[in-house]
Image (cartoon, rainbow, N blue to C red; front, side, top):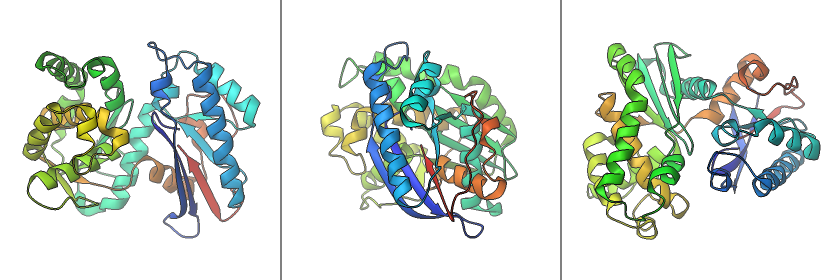
Length: 325
């Protein structure tokens, strides 16, 4: 259960790698339904309960009786989080696990390492979500350093860029200033480690990759391989000069993410600049794949990873496993 969407992934658990056999997505826009302080009101809770019920039923149709259902920053940051969790459990019978930001960074790094392989060497991972930015780095399967910062594309749009569809220079400077402030400690750590390979996951990075490829005179690839910082700077200028409805017409920018695409580009460019990264490799695997890989290796030890106080852990009912998030 993310800030914008609910995704269901069902995968075969036969072998060392998870093989997705079915995926589905629903628009939830949970963060947009939150109050100014992050509290989830009655309408948001009802939508969340409805979504949990739907995806659990959908998983059951595939023979998965006990999917692992988890939420990220929108629920994690809600002041009434425990109320939300209790209502979801009471109305659906499911425990909604709240994934910590630290664990988001670690699991995304695990997925990227599995995808990139050991030839990537010392690696730094960047992942821009709707509510948070995850950064992790290390030389092994799990990161030596990981952090989650409140720099999601949706969050910054609501807090800094929501009033004007085409923001003025002052608003953009305020966003950059906030990003640099939040990144100060992480940037010092990454610069000191000097990783060999920089990897980026998330839909935000992939859409920016398609936009940059198109602006370089190439047909926007469905799965771009890299994102170069100097290209991103040019794309950022394009996005900043257009209202959201016109950004949606740009190559790679979906209508659902057009409004927050500018903030996403500012986060991506400023982060790469602060961390002294010239380019990133775009990786298709991220948090959900990290969850599935961990399920294969460790039989779902997620109780210790969540901020929920609930004790239920996911079991292994069939040859299929499901994650919803």
